[in-house]
Length: 144
Image 1 (cartoon, rainbow, N blue to C red):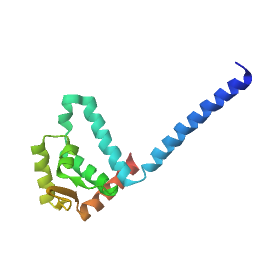
Image 2: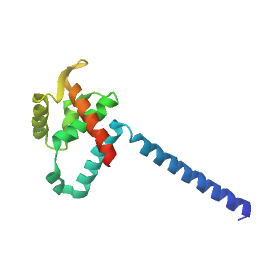
Image 3: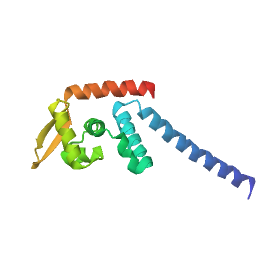
Image 4: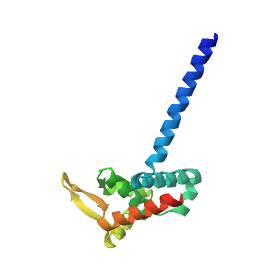
C-alpha cells in the first residue's frame, strides 16, 4: 500500500467519523423540542421494560405512556386511534381502556369519532393537557 493510499484511507475514516458526529449533534440538538423529549422518554421507558422483561410490570404507568404518545403524535400531526393509544400503554386492552376512560373523565384527553371511519374513535390531548405536557417536558429537559 502506497503512502497516498494510506492517506486516502485515513481521509475516508475521518469523513465517516464526521458523519457520525454530525448525526449525533443533530440528535442532541433535536432534543430541544418538547416532542423529541417526549419520544425519548417513551423510548427510554420501553427500553427499560425490555431490560427487565416480565418484571417490567412493576414500573407501569399506562396513563403516562399514553400521554407521552398522544403528545408526540399531536406534535407531528398524527391522529391516534383508541387502539394505538392502548398499544402505547403496553398493558392489556381492558386496562388501557380503563385508563383512557379515566383520562377522558378528568378532561386530560378528548375523544371523537374519526371523520373518515365512523366505526373508529380517535383521541388527542386537551388543550390544557398539551400546555401541561409542554411545561413538564421543558422542565424535564433542564434536569436531564
